[in-house]
Length: 139
Image 1 (cartoon, rainbow, N blue to C red):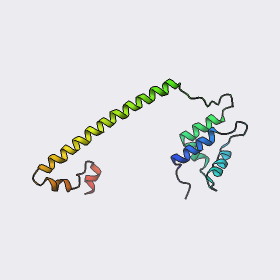
Image 2: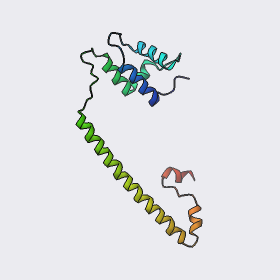
Image 3: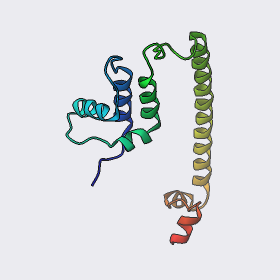
Image 4: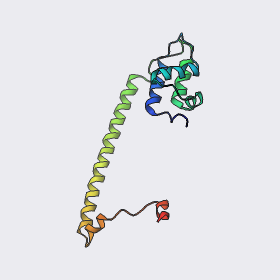
């Protein structure tokens, strides 16, 4: 059996290897595979095809292949862009938290209402009916 799929953690570690690749050292897929083997202390590593099929690794590889003058570690966006983005995301989190709280309240109200029905407690103990076609066909 071949190597397992590249995990997010392994992908991030490989991208770091590529970002820190010395400009004076020649970068090839084989040299990258040797570095990965050293980093992960493994005898078997992913193939060139597997590595290049991963978009993040491929992009980092292409960036590392560029001459030193073209390589840039500077952020792609200005600080103000990141500040605005953080504010947008914080507002989005607050909005989603409010929606979650409202849904939790509605859920509790529905449970209370069902419990008041004759036999309602028994209804709450039953498994939920299927809402997908595949599950209905499995019965």
